[in-house]
Length: 193
Image (cartoon, rainbow, N blue to C red):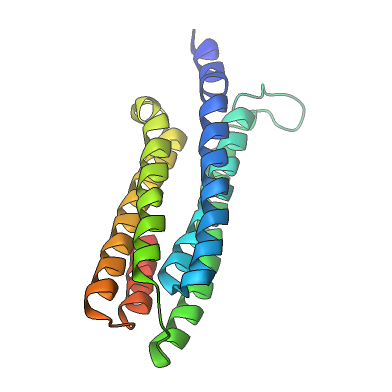
């Protein structure tokens, strides 16, 4: 019985991982394009974070599959510990993304640039939708599988980050204060860490 359960997650979640990755790839492309056009560090920071999400989802998918490989030869316990190693790799990727985000935000905080607040709000609004849909794909399994729970919590937190970017865009639009954009980038860094 326990053996059958081990094979459930990759089969049941393969499609969900594929959908989540696909949605996020399309969104990152849009977010980078609009982030560059709107000159928004917050959108580019969120895009950088979402790239690490895509990689994280891909690694979680691979780890979920690898954890089902039966013990043999030198892997006498199989590859069940792969999910732990993937968690460490995801953390390292996030630290790299944080360094890039901080560098860009610091430069724009010192030298604020004009930002299209309305564009920022619209694109980040789509981010809320994409991240919420992706989180919901993993809602059911997050109670029984730590790897799936990690994917769920990560994407749910990202929906919150996108909400923060929408709020930043609104304040930029209302006040015209360009320092808000890089300041929100630093808030995104705190959320990531």
